[in-house]
Each structure stands twice: as C-alpha cells, then as structure tokens.
Amino acid sequence: MQFTDPALSALAAVIRTGSFESAAATLSVTPSAISQRIKQLEERIGTVLIQRGQPCRATDAGLRLCRHADQVALLESALDKELGTGVAPGQGATVRIAVNADSLATWFIAALSAQSDFLFDVVVDDQDHSADLLRSGAVMAAVSSHAKPVQGCDVTPLGTLRYVATASPAYADYWFAEGVTPSALRRAPALTFNARDGLQRQWVQREVRQAVALKSHFLPSSQAFVEGAVQGLGWGMNPELLVSEPLRRAQLCAIGMNPYLDVPLYWQINRLIKKPLRGLTRAVARAAKHNLVVR
Image (cartoon, rainbow, N blue to C red; front, side, top):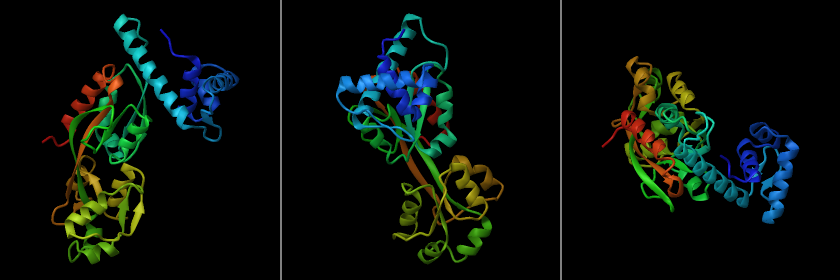
C-alpha cells in the first residue's frame, strides 16, 4: 500500500541521502525523475525545498515537508501491518532518531535490532542537544538528557548512563602523582569527544569545585576515546559499559576522589507517531533496563 505523494518520497530521499543520484537509486528511478518531482513539488508549494550542492540540504520548508512525509509513511506502515499487507522486514518506513554516541556504542543497537518493521536513520548528537532536533522536526524520537518533554512529545525515563574518569596507570602516575588538583588538570591533556561534549568540564567542576581551563585532544569516536585513554593520550570520561574490561585488566584506572558521573537519559518521541512506534519504545526501555543504572 502506498498513499504517499511520490514527490514527497523523492524529497525525503534527497534530504536523507544528500544527492539526487543516491535518492534515485533508493527509489529505483532515474535522477532526472527525482529532479522533475522535486521541481514540480517546489512549484506546487511556491518555495525552494532543496539547496542544491554537495551534499544537497533541505530548506526549513523542505524539512517540514520531509517530516510530514516520514510521518505519513510511518502511519501507512502501521496500517499495512494492521491489514496484514505489511512489507518484508527491513523494508518498511524510515524512522529518524537522535542518539548520543556513547548510547549507540553500548546499549542502543539492541533496541533497534529488536524491531524488524522499520529502517532506521540514526543521527548522532550529544544527549544535551538532541532536544533541538526534536523541536525542529528533524527527528521523530531521541535519547535525551532532558526530563521535560519537548512540545508535542512524550517522555519515558530510561535510567542513568554512568561515566568514569579514566586514564592509563602510567598517565595517572605522571600527571596526577600529587592527586587530581586544579594545577594538575590545567597541565594534563584531556580527551573531548567534540565541541558539544561537556562531561569533562562537569566532572572537573564537581571534583575540584572550580572551573579549570583544560587542554584537550578531540576524538569524535567512542571506541577511539577509550583507546586514547588506554594508550596514554589523555584522561577522559568514558562510559562504564565500555571500560569495565580495560579497568579489570588494569589498562585503565579511575582517577579522582569520586570518578563517577551519572547522566540520566530519557526517550522522547513525537506524540503524533507514538502509536506505530510503541514497539520501538518498549524495545528501547527494555534495552535501557538491562544496561543502564536504573534508580
């Protein structure tokens, strides 16, 4: 069953893949057909929907239409399932979700793998900022650190992702021989995931009760972050789920008087499509229960 406007499907495909050629391959049509559909849609709407380039990007109007197309496709998929005319596993509607990198690297894949009715488009963003993607309509659901629901969304508490301030034993002996002090922290190279990562600053503020200007390497990969600590590149806040084995093997050690930092996580989902995604919500809650610290 397919009620969605082919032009809307083309728009969503271009936005998702970043090019007319990739969108054409996704929809099994020619690039010229994609171009014609987008042109006709822009003429119907009366505004530009796609900023052509490498990659192609959506305008604000294009994002709103793409959100509409995704929601309609999701509702169609749910109707197909109710009528017993559903598509094969992995061939259903695409669900766009924002997830922080550490959840993706530790527990979230288990939730996705439990759902075979959808395709997933995962956007990696910091848990403190994923709410912005929900507000803009760029994603349908998100793992967020915000307990307050974004307008139009429902919230499910998931539990706490525990981080540990870690470094290699040799690194700790060299840089923190006198303890984790403000002066030592100013000198010791830290590890930071990206510009939005504030975990190291949060922990330092609590540990030494003052803000400290950190010198830092930037490593935008959860696995590289752990390896950077193991190899003595710097110290950083690593998810306990990722470093339990290196800690057990003494490849890493916890630093500071209280090395732990707990980050509460919440599942926020657009209320308009929560019914067809209730199975996903249950899977996310189940995976979180088995992996996060639940209070």
